[in-house]
Image (cartoon, rainbow, N blue to C red; front, side, top):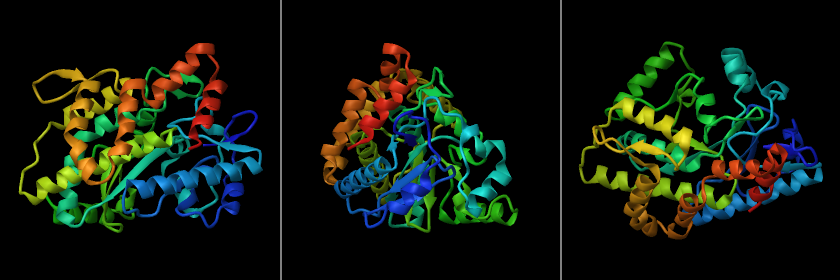
Length: 350
């Protein structure tokens, strides 16, 4: 979020940031609206390198913003901003998106976190994408960082999820048999002129053939760098586990779509403080308990990847609350949304 340093309102100032950013490892770029700033690391060897790049990017854009009387904050939504006051970036891609989707695109004043993990075989990538579907609700719960929308405490810790749900081709993706099946089904949608290419599938999880990755897109942007890296480390460990299962010839367990979709809602509503359906017919379990079980199972994978230190951020989310829960705590003290944004800005600095 690009905000005015004094008022903390969103500021349509992306061009001022882009003009000054050069020479920093990674990418600083525009998104749909002029008040939104996207940073992305380059492909990294491991989570440590990704962390170094991300910290460098945050420090750089923060310094550039300060030179223009601006500040940078990271969360899933701006607590009191109105989408009607945001300008669309002057690029054909974004103008075309607004032309196609109208209000649905204009009201997408949300901020997400995307994690790409390289996978070395196309059929394996499909297997991993299918397997990650069951993990999406837990990742939404851990990343829940958007309890406010248009100056309203919504009752959800991840308000971003239902807002984005108005887009076409979002939410849980279908399960594909293999890469050939994926190609055939994407080709059908392109030939039908539903979309120009597969990048217009905005699912929570998707294979990204051009990059050779599986991309997980379900989480809110995180305020604290350590939480961003912790969720990325957890995702990488999940992908590693699924890759090993594929290599050993194990079949994925089957879960009803209804269960996974309902779990997305439960996760968005309550973060890690509520319940979630663990197995079909087994009823609901505390989300925190499920997270602790998954975390314990994956610690060895994280150690193999050199990410055990970063994974400690998940312990912090479970013990001290997700970003959304922390925003609510700040708000409850004085019912002051600008205080909430000020806190976001302060903790966005690495």
